[in-house]
Picture 1 (spheres, rainbow, N blue to C red):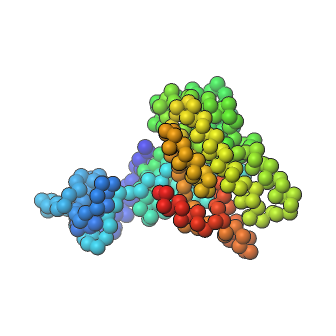
Picture 2 (picture 1 turned 180 degrees about the horizontal axis):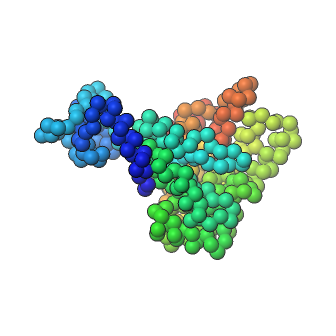
Picture 3 (picture 1 turned 30 degrees about the vertical axis):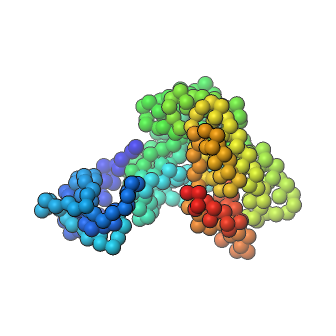
Length: 331
């Protein structure tokens, strides 16, 4: 876990001082409805020197503490967003949110920790890629952050780099891409090598599950049919493409006896594969996105191009409005 850069932390302390009119070393959040993993109750939270020091039904005895009345409000732990892409170079573009904007937005929504993705260029040394991503983030983040590391190629240097990242840099998770043929994709043999190496290191493996060959075929045939708008994105990679890849990687991970985290599950068919794997004893986790819980792929058919294009993502949002209801129930 990386903490705030010294300059940024100082800046945030100054912001807090302006809000309260003075600095403080302790803070009591009083009479809030505290929601923890084990229970929900009315109580107080004591914060000392920026850390939660106590959670109890009633906290007294600190005359110097600043008190915030949280009556009628929920007090919950800060959220952890395990999947963000900040300042990410991708296919000639860069994701719009830099580390300052992205982490400020996170804090505004109650998220206090982000986990970003290092995406090495093909052939780039993994430690060099780590240093590159860290240099972008350091001193620019308003909240805590950490990194996963994507693996975009395989050769004899990769397991050595994975070892350094785990044992010296604190990286504990590695992402494989079954999609993006010719750029980010690892083939099946390479994926087995990642699973075996991660197992030896005690690291988690993650996967973007879409079959690259099926996607490439679908894209060609959709384009040949003259469908060039945002709706073609979903048509080129139907639910079965995501489900097949999810099934395949769960099978590989179970063979190696290695935990697997399937990122951005977007279809019920893929979610079914995660559930099937868990029933059979595989250690597999499925992640979905806020977008899949709040909107659906019908937006891809909007006649306004810029609106429809804003809903393009991979795997695609499902046009069936019942998908987000199903996902909410599964959460």
